[in-house]
Amino acid sequence: MSLLAFGAAALALQPAPLAVPQNYRLVWSDEFSRAGRPDARRWAYDTQYNRRGWHNQELQYYSARRRGNARVEAGRLIVEARAERLEGLSDYGGQGYSSARLVTRGMARWTYGFFEVRAKLPCVRGTWPAIWMLADGSGARWPDGGEIDLMEQVGHEPGRIHQTVHTAAFNHVSGTQRSAQTHVPDACGAFHLYQLDWTRERIVMGIDGRATFTFGHSDDPRAWPFDGPQYLILDVAVGGTWGGAQGVDDAALPARMEVDYVRVWQRPAGPAPR
Image (cartoon, rainbow, N blue to C red; front, side):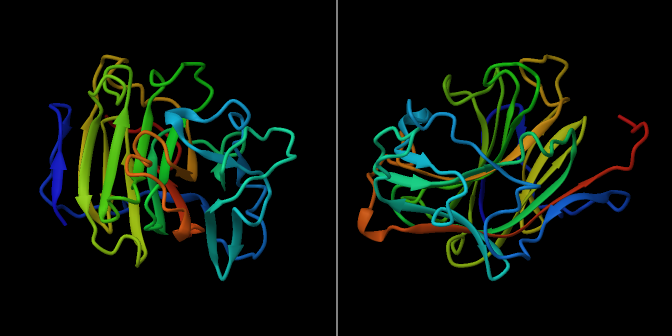
């Protein structure tokens, strides 16, 4: 794997081990052991922009509780994008594609911790799968509350994994986001671990137990808004300014992201040294 890191606040690491700290305990997980719809005690569906259209000029309609787009089978969560029109739904916005956006918002959120998602990605031109986090309950508008992207990939660059943080000071709108890119040739053919070690001092992300990116703490809240709770998101977008930069291969759809498990560990309650 090769690493490209950008910006003074994103410090490139030599490949170093990344693992759950020994004193952490498992506080939340989904092993996807029960077939059917995703566990409603753990996951909700984000559909809020279906009628008006999603950000970044994305082309998908995100369905809710529809097995064609989100289901558990054979011990894996399937998030599937399809080329289809869902006329007649009350919040339908005329999209030509369907998919799902699963969130833990309203059920689980975390401030700091070690996060690990084992996933296999789609390889279809026009798809844009992501494993990421957003601020929960802060009232701040994006990007002021902070965004942590454990994994993003676009189908026209199937072997390139992006890991990024967005803040008021560093974000893609202004072209100042802090990001690393890692070459994972079989990201679409095999499962890999996408990891985040988030503390009060830094954010470190990695793949398969090797650190690939770190972002250090700052006393400036525009640069470091990461001292409040965030929730987890799993989705497969279609098209958009980035995902659809080379069009969408309708003939290759449906396309799926498969997730073997999601696990979250945290330090036991009590004061933590800084």
